[in-house]
Amino acid sequence: MTYVLVAVLAVSLGWTICYRTRAAAARVERAIRPPGPHPIVLDEIALGWQALEETCCLTAWESRGAQHDPATCTRKDQTL
Image (cartoon, rainbow, N blue to C red):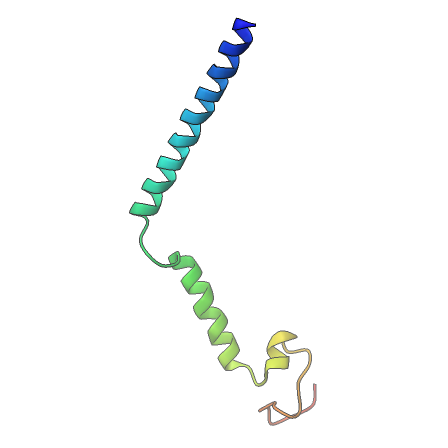
């Protein structure tokens, strides 16, 4: 009975120390991380906005040029 109690206390103490260590490491990582999104994410966002601005209509952007909405499409030739 005593060994079981010691084992349970040791496991719970080990878990607590491990949890607190991970939580402290996460706090340190958040503290040293520069604010804002990662530069690679910013590049992807910029490329996405550029593609959206260069498209003729939202339907064409969604379908990657396969379909067009004649009511809002700015293309001169309406043939696919």
